[in-house]
Image 1 (cartoon, rainbow, N blue to C red):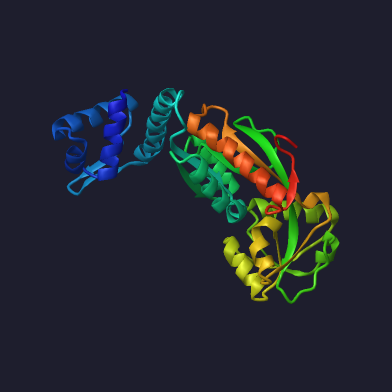
Image 2: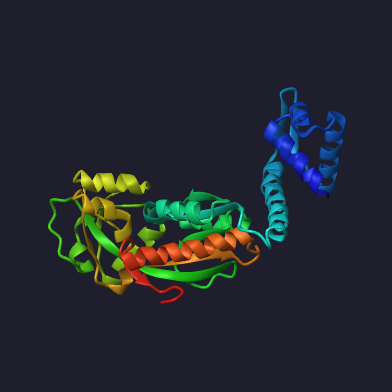
Length: 309
């Protein structure tokens, strides 16, 4: 199997026909068809369904497409790593952020990268932590901010901070400076679904304390959770950093919980199988420094447990 075959395969998959791919790849259509047929023979599977309308990926083709893109991306990373050894960091770096982290950290990280690493093209992907972990393993991400420092054979996790979860309510609700979890028993809450990492922490803490929350609605969009609380639908539980602006504006009220079970450890994760490039290593250091700055300034309420603590 040759790299050019992977490039041809991706070109045909994206174009949807040999004719269109031939024009974009600058390869004669018969030669292109031969390369695709040779690839299918080597794999022992049909990658495309041929018809008068063009070529559509089979299930095997869709699976192979993911791997082909990762292989070519790795080749480009390898070239870039060697080329950039003696130069400033450059190239694309993809950073994964969970939704609650993205609310607090996206803009500061992007601003810092633009100022300090002008030749790095930072791509930020926002998703649930479970998806981010899978994408790190698959090579779609260079690094990601996740939760929990439990052992993971596929990832290298570097603890950064412990962030405090808080009771978040509408501005008309009077909350103390800190609140015990027991006070939430029987109160009406709007929370993400049970597959959400934040919801799992809340459920486990409540179960351990023998507390049952009255969850009146499950909303997957964190901005919409905040809007629902602001409109008086109920309360919610979120990291303080994710509602800092609304609290400062007087649109929401928040009080951190006193229990250690309502802390969440934030880690910076990379894949054990994917070597860092000059650019991704620079972004790794930048993210660490920027989050430390946010914790020290109070912009991200929490306790720093990362480098230099």
